[in-house]
Amino acid sequence: MNAYAKMGQDVAVETASPHKLISMLYEGAILAIVKAKAYMQNGEVAAKGESISKAMSIINLGLLASLDTSVGGELAHNLQMLYEYMLRVLLDANIQNDSAKLDEVAVLLRDLKGAWDAIEGKTQAEAAAPVERASVSYARA
Image 1 (cartoon, rainbow, N blue to C red):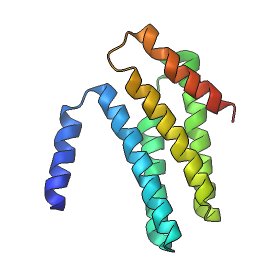
Image 2: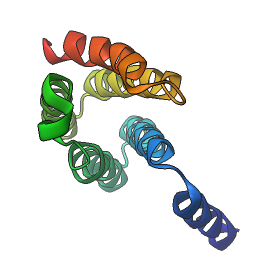
Image 3: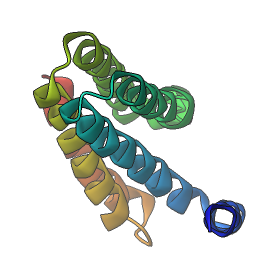
Image 4: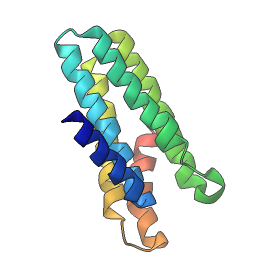
């Protein structure tokens, strides 16, 4: 069963548009945080750490690495600051065993994912507005 699920994920990634890939990264990070919170509540320290590490990897090596500040300007810079903030909060959540910090990052990721998903199919000018509002409001946090 796991092999079929893995194969389905591989096919989804291979056939996804760049826009969809970013959405999938948000989704993966959120899922990893949800799992980390469950592991935290069950006292499964190693599994909690692995899930938080997975979320951090997705944010760092996927979302943060995909930013191009030379093209994205202020929006990309704000997202960069936000992703770096999320990484710090996730590290603190792991060290302090703090589920509220996991919730904080999950909310940020859900908001960004919602804004990102809303812009699919719009022009670049129309598309930047909802993501920029989300990133600026959280970059100030």
